[in-house]
Length: 244
Image 1 (cartoon, helix red, strand yellow):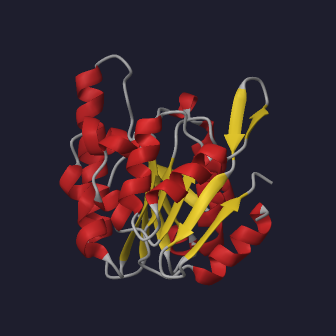
Image 2 (cartoon, helix red, strand yellow):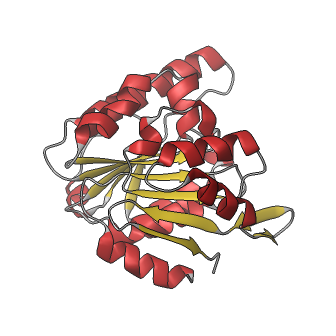
């Protein structure tokens, strides 16, 4: 399916509280597609909190997303609210980092992300908790309970969208809870095997065969982007999303 057609369909199918997981290695186009999907469904009535762990100079994608999606980048949580925030679609929390003391930087990331995740989970209005680099937050920062809480008990208020690179180390709930799952081309057969077995509702061998057949294209100077296998549980629906 061409990407514009997929995005239109996703907009019509998505409902508040539905979780979304994108699985695959870096340099496959997960973040780009996830933000395109997010753009279709966010609004001031369905706000978003994006957890972004990279420093500003290393993450130009977030600055672009903030402008395109009407989000405000903040370094601390909770942010000091302004009148303009009522019309915004939400926030990107990108904690300040000294880049000199890794323990202090990690502690600040964990503290700020934990506060944002707790607030999202406790929200009384529809909200999307967008977790970029979910493996880092789940494992390196040790926020396992905070990550799993929306997946296990948060719907229909707090929807969790996860971008996962090292999928075989993630919680089972990252695969079983989402209504929408997208799997990108992955050379690591161990990852593909876990994706295939944990998604559920579809024959694992069938999923693995499709993922292994997805096409990958080179873009720019050394970058790549791949097709994605889309699975919607309640359909059930399954098809390949093109890169264009």
